[in-house]
Image 1 (cartoon, rainbow, N blue to C red):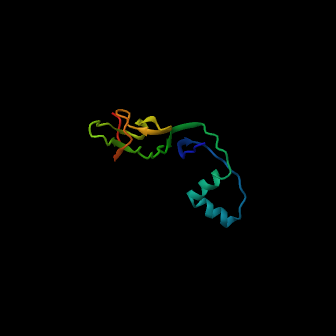
Image 2 (image 1 turned 90 degrees about the vertical axis):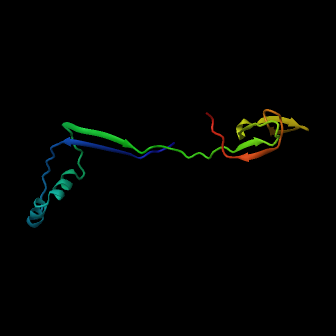
Image 3 (image 1 turned 180 degrees about the horizontal axis):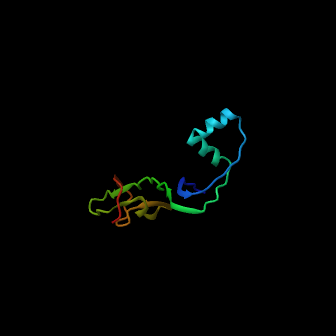
Length: 118
């Protein structure tokens, strides 16, 4: 099973109220720092959203890198066939099945760059 990373982002208006008991110096330090207040409010708390603003999701682009199939040209100069490994024909010579040119059935090839289908 493949897994992909996703990022979900939402802007929401919520109201969270939390009652905590702290020593006076810690309480004053907490009340003076907005970031710490936000962390305290959202820590271990399921937020009930009353209204969503802008919500969107983003998934990383999925891709695979495939190795190009080997390309070949027939070594028979009168034939001129050019193709990929999968384009070769299966022929039986002396009871052995081998790959040959689909046009002239020659078994000799030159390696070329990958052939792209159009």
